[in-house]
Length: 165
Image 1: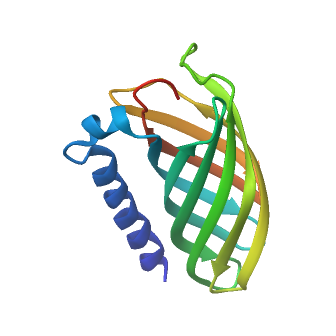
Image 2: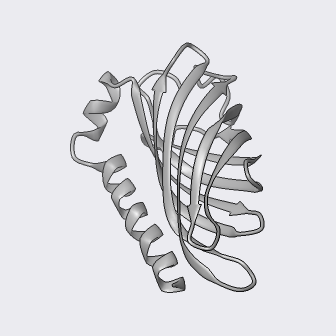
């Protein structure tokens, strides 16, 4: 199962890379209120999981974004391993919507569901703090730490919006 846990995230990341850099993505960036992202998450609890995921955020206000996140990967504990997947709806409050500084903090929170072959389904209440970086040729890096069913760590790339974060 460890092979599946590595192969699935690599496949998802390849799809995200295509989404972020697809032909015409730069043209779409100027018109869209949607922001695509690719991410890798480590979810550490009784069962630890590593997920490759995709995120689609929408502007909900000057400082607020609403995101749908999906991820798939592998999970393990001391006795077994297996496939793991999750879905989340998160609200993100950005402190610097205009790129006034290179690195800007944000807070996020929401609800999620997670499936691990080892323990089955469960729901999570999620809280996280993040740091979003500068626009690097149309892509914005981000890092997150938080809690939701255990400790959470994420890093990823968001497609930059034409004006602001």
